[in-house]
Image 1 (tube, helix red, strand yellow):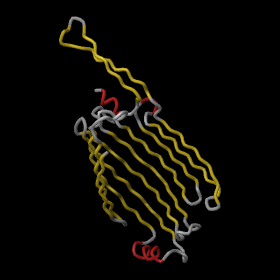
Image 2 (cartoon, one colour; image 1 turned 120 degrees about the vertical axis):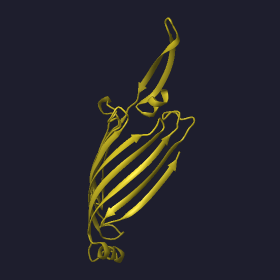
Image 3 (tube, helix red, strand yellow; image 1 turned 30 degrees about the vertical axis):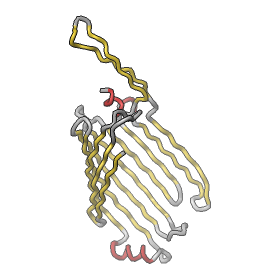
Amino acid sequence: SKSRIDRTQYFKDVSVESAPVADRADQVDVNFTVEEKPTGSLLLGAGFSSVDKLVVAGSVSQSNVFGSGKFLAVQVNSGKVNQAYALSYLDPYFTVDGVSQGFDLYKRSVDASSLSVGAYTTSTLGAGFKFGYPLSETDGVNFGLVAEHVKLGLSDTSPLSYLNFATIFGSGYTYATGSIGWGRDRRDSAIQTTRGSLTRASIEVAAGNLQYYRANIGEQ
């Protein structure tokens, strides 16, 4: 039970004590004492460069919104070269059985016409849904589906490889990616780990105007 509480990562200290139940020789009361930790972060930044001019960036994330255990994050980046606006939400306890559910919305733009890497622009609009399902105390699977529309802009000064790519695949791409992942968390504590491991594996497949597949596996 202590490990379960630790793995929520909402607390910086968890202690447990057991006390005998009066007139019950075969029973004990289990008492937990927890100390919450800050679960939110706020990042703000501003700068100026000869390329980006004035840049304002910021992000807000909270992994325990109003004490509900839900995760919410907002990101804004207003640079001339890179612009990003994103919203992410996850309810890790959508059901009492531990099924999680969330979504992502984002819009990203890149204007590399003023950089030495080659003139091009991209505009990406995407949305996705994600679900997680616990298999056991330590194992779980997750599923994701993301749809994206990407618009590519080129000019006569763009590199030849970019122009050839656009000739073959066009300048607009609409595709969807589906993913499935598995994770095993055998750590005794996510706060102060002394034994155990965290293993993750996933497969991602894209279909539509662009097609690819990708596999990842890692352990720590």
